[in-house]
Length: 198
Ligand SMILES: [Zn+2]
Image (cartoon, rainbow, N blue to C red):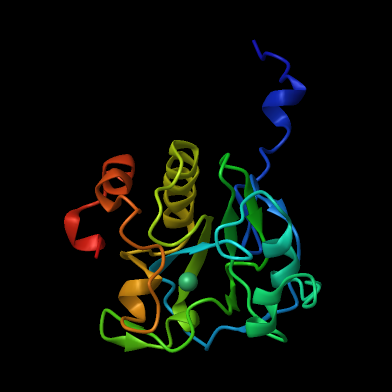
């Protein structure tokens, strides 16, 4: 005897990833991206911190920066970054809210001059995740939860073997996320082996 299938059983589940876009992120397209090099092996996650101006939390300046809509005259600090065209794949707010600006299949502009695991130009083959916060300061439990879940989801879809901070891939030039970021906590959250971490 055949049971009639319920609509829930027959409807295909929405995929976690579609063209490099993560189902559980709020999407806001950035124009700041390019193609990855042919054959790029996306095996690295780069963790950053950001707040604009530095130390101010809760505004929409980061989303504006990544979409080239920041008012450069709105704060004296913005003079120092006027015209900057950058992006990251993801942005995690203090409460854990997740945004995505660039498809992970594409190359976001977050790491700059960088080198890790013997390869340079980390933008070519990494996924960039920005945490809302000031480098050196602590981050929120909700951010670790969101970051852990996101990294696990990324690793389901891409051959991630390494995770490092911007400070590790661009030493001397960058200090984020800094000493306030708890790498051991992230490692516990993910359960990945020590050699994946900086
Ligand atoms: Zn950074």
